[in-house]
Image (cartoon, rainbow, N blue to C red; front, side, top):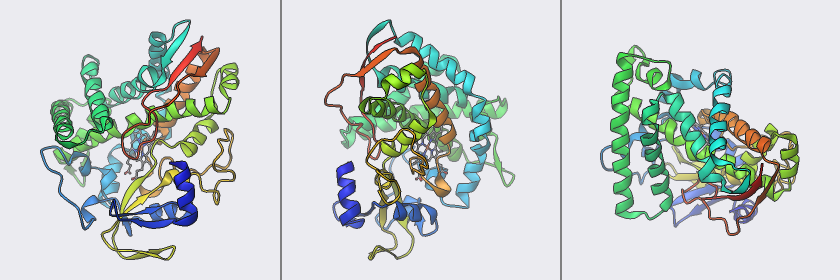
Length: 383
Ligand code: HEM
């Protein structure tokens, strides 16, 4: 998409797309301004003039969460789990994340050979980590992973249509049912895990409604998985394309700045949606109240007005105020966790490898909309 972004930043930085019936915004300053102004640009899809209520039980589950609520409700819902995701709380998880990473690498790497980085490493890690944080019992992990797989694969098979919707609903139902049981259990008998935190939370002395408890659990699962998978994968792809493999295998580690640069250069989330709550003029274009705006942070991240040489991958770039985790009120709650997972995963990987090469030609893009990555990334390696 990057050539298209460049053209749009120069020629049509704010434009209406009749096909999608929405606006597109491409420049860094405009994207940031929108994300900074959550009263003019709402995350609540029901504020759109063409909003249609999602159908079917559970279809709107994720809509009942902080991601799609404006303040003040947003702040209350985010407050329930905010402390658990602060950098200090997350740092304590490092030894355990390292252990989980090593277990996966022990199972995956042989002396030398070929591997698919996505299915064998970058995908399983975030699923195991979030299952553990939520407090999904060890004996249910396989079932839990199957549901996650189903949610990801049916979203990315991209077949659309009825079959897709049915499968999606079935998985959501099964998973929802499973979570509800666990939630009841933890309400009675709280443990030191996220499900207990959410299940026993009170806002103004009232427990959270069931839909919001369930929605929050599902959100944490869905928001953190393919995104972190793609961060790890996109990083390795960037390193390979920029001849950095030797540097990192020699060092046995990957610097944080290279992960930040991946979040800028190949951001796992390329765009987000907002709804204008009132008429607003940007770059001479008038966006009407109730109209949808697609905010292209993947384009903002390449904008030469903000980033010198924006279309080059510069692993020690500084400063690097990328928008890979968003900005403002909805700035990614999981950012400290995603950063830690990526740093541990990549450093453990390069610590073991003595030689590695990208061998895929014709990489297939991830099919989920707004998510950017590849379906698989074949590597040849030696340990
Ligand atoms: C929000 C990206 C990992 C949980 C967001 C947003 C972005 C983002 C761009 C803002 C959405 C918006 O403004 O509409 C990413 C990327 C990740 C990642 C690129 C990995 C590399 C995670 C993880 C978790 C998580 C690991 C939790 C386990 C959330 C939540 C929100 C959010 C709960 C909503 C925050 C709010 O509305 O206040 N993420 N995310 N994310 N993310 Fe992440």
